[in-house]
Length: 537
Ligand SMILES: *[C@@H]1O[C@H](CO)[C@@H](O)[C@H](O)[C@H]1NC(C)=O
Ligand SMILES: *[C@@H]1O[C@H](CO)[C@@H](O)[C@H](O)[C@H]1NC(C)=O
Ligand SMILES: *[C@@H]1O[C@H](CO)[C@@H](O)[C@H](O)[C@H]1NC(C)=O
Image (cartoon, rainbow, N blue to C red; front, side, top):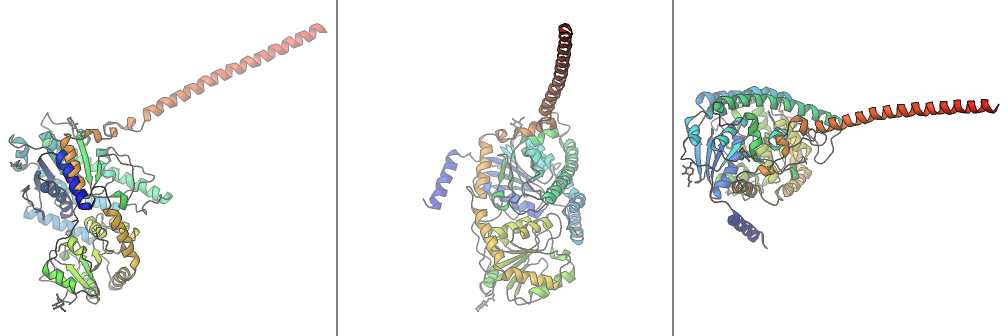
């Protein structure tokens, strides 16, 4: 059977068993573009397959569809300013240490948290569950430390699935009931070559990182309890906050452990759809970019520092260093640059563009290198298309993403904040001229694409699965419902231990009395013997 026929058969099976068009409410209110891109790609799959998806956002999404009803509640000018200044101050600091960065970010992330919280008080949102004419079958929640928003699924009394732009990590253990196998599953910031056991130092670092994460989670959970109680606490029909995490049917992760690692034990509610935002078949490029690439006889480089790090946040001398190196290359360069009135410099081999179809450009055979800021999305796209990278990480998870990419052998990395001409030039040349980077990333690309269901098919299948069965509590790990003592079997160990102690005590008494008896007997015997001897005398 050809792949097309297989796919049609598969679709046919889905249609026969499939749910009818469902009303799905998607809460994607985190005002971070890289999150929205991934989350809304999942909503789009559902919309394309006939479901009626109502999406709540605080950013204007790039994706539109006739089956997507958008409730767009934008940031106010004031909020936009706060967010921009928060991001630019993050860019100015050296955040190469992930752990300190996480805690520093806590303050900055509180902006996002408070936005999410205010949003839930908006009359348009409250109307969704107060107006009885609305009928929803499922809630899909974009997760970013915002569990209190699970309350909306409880208000609507419908099952809930989580959509996250993050990869699977210990953050989600409380919802999945997953166990974190500290000895062999590295946490996010401990980079270990895939499939390799951790050495002693790595295991120690892993345990400490895990402790820091748990502390961080504890703090955000406290915020969540408070927000939940404020929003829903007055309604006696609502469950306690602690029970929300126990009511998640499944989680869509933006990862693919089979190709990316780390390999870990997983419960069935963990569904990996890494690469969901990537088109399986690229769209044709805009004419200007297409011509520019067609004529690139020595290949081309794509440079994009993502949507968080805008060109304007960067220091002028760093931009100058970058321009000086790039303008002297044989290769053509497509540079994503927001402010076209103030470009870094003019050069025949450089094309500036405010907005780029990054995914489609990376698919182009002329692209030989992708210079990025080590955002998850960009790295995944580059890996999907088998293109080597030079990463210039700045803050948040970027340094760790870059470390992992380098460890995997897909390219090189250097800090954007301290970028100098010579090392920048040398690293570009190394990645362009040493074929190993390309070979490794191409091999990865094959592994990443080889799945029983594509990322899109998985989102559709598993969402409809939850719809068909009105929730998927049966997928859940019983661990979700267990307390600390039971989860760690401490009561059983305690009982066994008491048994052993009792047995030891009893044996001690028995042995002692036997010993005494034996001693007594031999004494008697001796005495008897003596007596006999005396008699015979
Ligand atoms: C789709 O959802 C919107 C928003 O809840 C609702 O107004 C509309 O009637 C729904 N359409 C269908 C066909 O169910
Ligand atoms: C590409 O090359 C052709 C033929 O050499 C030329 O006519 C065209 O202007 C070039 N396009 C660009 C964008 O440089
Ligand atoms: C969520 O709670 C409802 C009502 O208590 C229950 O019927 C359902 O099975 C729960 N779902 C999950 C996934 O635990």
